[in-house]
Image 1 (cartoon, helix red, strand yellow):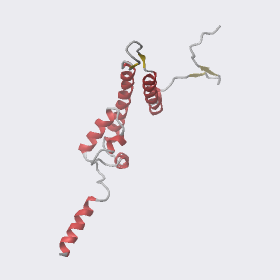
Image 2 (tube, helix red, strand yellow):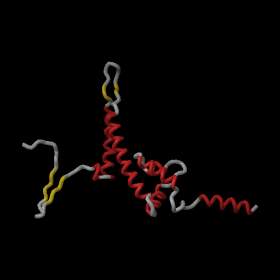
Image 3 (spheres, helix red, strand yellow):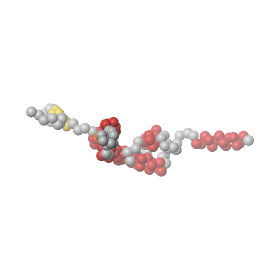
Image 4 (cartoon, rainbow, N blue to C red):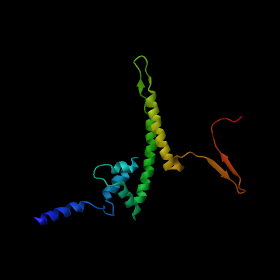
Length: 157
């Protein structure tokens, strides 16, 4: 009787604890594909039977192979996917509201779409400022003079 209880306890405990230090290659491929499509790592980890996001970052920190390089490349591809999604949101026809004789664009829908695009673009600018950030030209010459050029689009008189 005691042997059965001990065996049962050991089998339950074998499922607990830290995951292996080496990542499962199937999970690595899933993560790379997930991130490259513009999804978040946390949304991947929220799925049933997926590792915790912190576990994945531990794998990246301990990586001696190409996982971290592939992950960074997938992030870049994911950013491009988010930028393309912004174009799709903008190109989507606006919803109409009103009665049959008085239809017009739904201002709430237009504002929601605008907010969705702006939030994505702001995140892209933070995540990759060289590619998606605003450009401000700063020129300096050898004497130490600095010339700041800001294009506002307003004609000068």
